[in-house]
Image: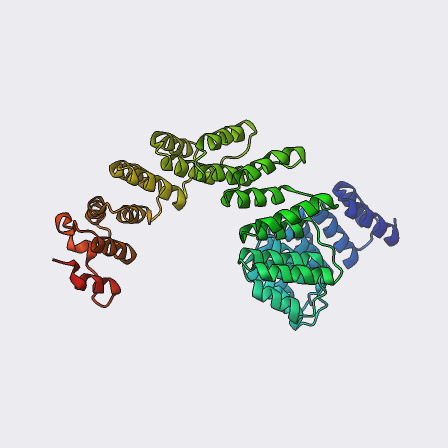
Length: 463
């Protein structure tokens, strides 16, 4: 065995991740008196990393540092790749700092490995810092790096910054970059910006894919341009564009919110024929549509179908049904769904609590609402604004006496009534001729004289 054959074998076994064979070659090399070179050490490390034996690769790296052969940029790149592979991106970033201390200059591969890993972990700050370092060091920045940075900025809701990178850095555009920018504009409600980018993309000769069209359809649905959304949807069906669940979910949600429930239901049924899986978002969209137009029996049938199809019923599913059932005065059924949600270990959201408290308060069951909230408080799932929401609901409904009693209870617990709730109180009291009979405590509506609530009090609210 000589150096050339050793290198060839190690390279082959390393690429394939054949660790046992790789170690056999290493031991045979030692037996034949061949001193390992930097190239051989790197091949051994790479083999370990390819087989996910990253700790073994680290041991080889440490042995290099304490021996005659010092690690080079390739050694660091291999170890950083390994760290990122096993979710130790922070350790990879530490190795980058170590390189600078030991005057081993990182290259494009070093930075791109870390940028990709930071992006996948949604660590946008590190992603941008690495990108800026590449610029400062005047390293070649591949188009993929621009795509990741622009996509990262867009995901963080920084579409303006993303567009600035796109325009100001001379980025060579591609479908992914355009789609990321359009998606960010969609989330910020900039429908006009989306269509301008879409047109620019086509003018530059790029062919939109199913993800791009999905963003367009979703944006048009969100902005109420349903007929346009349906046109794009039909165009995709007639063309070679693959239709996925996102198209259907967006349209079902948009049509349902616009009261076009029959069309939404038709699309829901069509999904199965087209081979699209109906997920929780899709089910929730149609259940919400039924609930909003008072078709609670149909909504409950869909809930049952979700169970039968093994589709995840999440907190939003339960919140929609609880709210809808209370609006139809089916209070006991609503409470059963609340209990079912809690029994399944689903943590209620502020919207869930609001649906429950609003339903119970408006049906005159304030005490029951308080009891449920008091029972949940020790579990640590009760939002701070839960009782405030109840006061707000009661005041808006003109049930001032019940609101005052609830507020008294909050004060008795040693809590302060927030200023925004006192504002609601004062406005409700001004409209109520029953104020003198109610007799709310001063502590409830006592505000600083320089606040506009104080102006309301000084205008004759107090007796």
